[in-house]
Length: 468
Ligand SMILES: *Cc1c(COP(=O)(O)O)cnc(C)c1O
Image 1 (cartoon, rainbow, N blue to C red):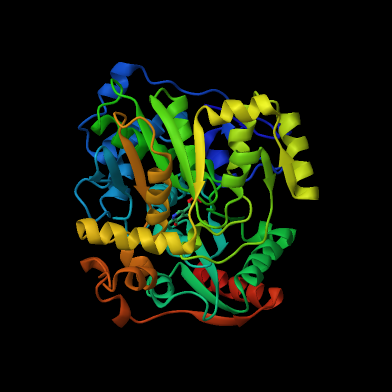
Image 2: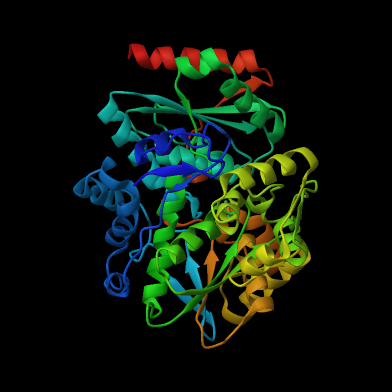
């Protein structure tokens, strides 16, 4: 399997290089040169497999010979053995033929574990084979940092440094990062905002001698391997509900468009998906886009579903590439215009093609709390605010009631307990594996908002580990 950039200017790469590179050199995103297809028999054969086995079968065609099959199976078994539910991704019916796919049983209680637990192990495998190490650097406003740390902890070939804004992430989020005792995990609390953290990370990547000396790498949401690992649960849910004989619809709480795009990949592979509902909070760039055909940047407004508070859905570029018939020059033009003017428009026939498969709805904070309260009153179940945004969109855009509709439950309610408690008066409890989170010792270094200071810290920690 070879990969091409959505902007077309780089050489075609194999899986290993795409895994380690993240972003393509021309600023585009990697996508497979062609889509592997599963025949209906192969899809049918997925029903009833254990989750790790199913995931390995879905990921295999994308990996090619970069990782041999036995190793890929081992990686998947190991990754999903850390999940706290025997089904890994259980389905729960919440209304007639409307299902929640619970994606929050991983070590950090959000769906990002599905991809990152595999990604960390793939990194380690490929780097060891090459005799290399990397330094993963990232900024977090809360959620991604802990999932990345859990993915990279104790990996021999990886050091990870995560910057968060001091005092601006919740106690649970901070502790999920700072209580990990592994020596290759380095938490930095920056005296500044999330934007300052992001600027520091960009500054380190732009400092070429530094970037090369420490082989900087990232595990952010545009990494292709994250997408394919997520594609697996679309197959798991659909086959459990009768695919390939029955068609199915999904509703996805969306920020960076990685998760819903992973569903699109499943469809490209042959899964009979009738519709994707894109659920956004008040940061509704995608809902506005589907209504008007104009994608227009607006300032980010903080919400109860912070992991969806984004300005630009980066992975949308991958879908754009398909909508523009894989014309990389046209994608480069559109993205250039978007960067310069903050606006991108699609031709009516392109918008029509998109709307045949996708629909989008918006749910603001008040409605989010109302939905959490409603679900609790009706079923006694607590749902997190991101999931609630999904349930709201599913209600609004429910199509043919004979088609199963699966709403992706992207986070555990205890991870966003403030909103859940406000809506229901009930405080969700952390699962047993994290019950003592508030008592564990923390490790974290506070640094000023200063590039030199952060680089010096990375340098010192790296040389200490090199000497050990
Ligand atoms: C990251 C995240 C999202 C958004 O997913 P994208 O792939 O960025 O669209 C939604 N919910 C939760 C809980 C998340 O952590």
